[in-house]
Length: 309
Image (cartoon, rainbow, N blue to C red; front, side, top):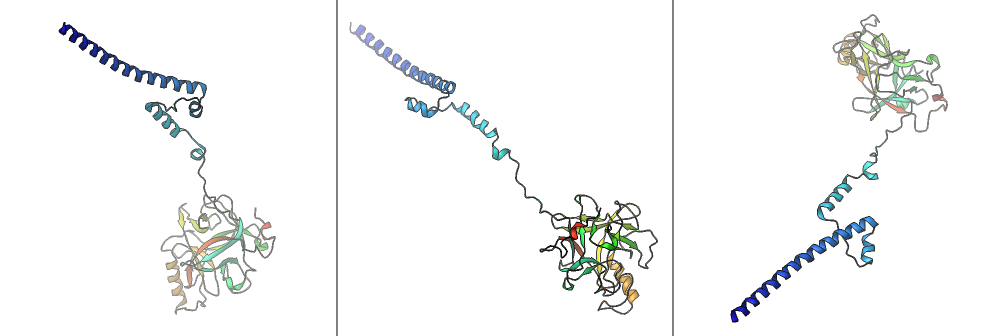
């Protein structure tokens, strides 16, 4: 009888343990089921967490795998900041009408380009560098085209004696001959003076207008001479500081030109006053920069109205 009582007690305790464990499992399953149903209800009815809290319901978060997908989806979704074009600083506007300044190899200003001023130089044959201290009343103005992607021509503004001309270069040998071949190259004493010329397309010739390139960042103008074989040669721009000439031109080898001038001059010429043709030993390399109009505008308000065709 005692054994029967003990067996009954044992089975009763075992049954209680089994029921308790089953109840705990069912409670967790019910919680998960309720959470899924509530989340589905929240989405289907558009219920916010605030409304659910107001109704005494739990604030729900989606299961972790689903939450990860939502976060990744938000990362991929565009927004006005990500999808907008990045702002870029515009190029500073450049007036198409203005002056051209000259600087030496140390980038010190030596003046502006001008043509045949009535004083300072005695026998100029080309564009010259007019020192700034002389005054601004004789400075020439030049017109740049809109498209400067390839070699281009620069129009000469407001000069009645050659209206419609362009700032180009005319070739000649050191002896003064215009007989070809019209080339510029290292070791050669040939030159091409900057003069008013007719409009031409990029290509070889005794006179060429399409020789210019523009650095949009610095506004520096560089010159390229096209040789008879069609090759483009980056020329050196020089200024003959001789008080008799003052001419500006192009060359393939300024050292060779100066050496030839020294032979022609004979004695040293420290004052740059000897008559040497076509270039004296006082020639120096210069760099040209587009300067636009003076800060106060041109002396003649209508100077830029005479646009070249």
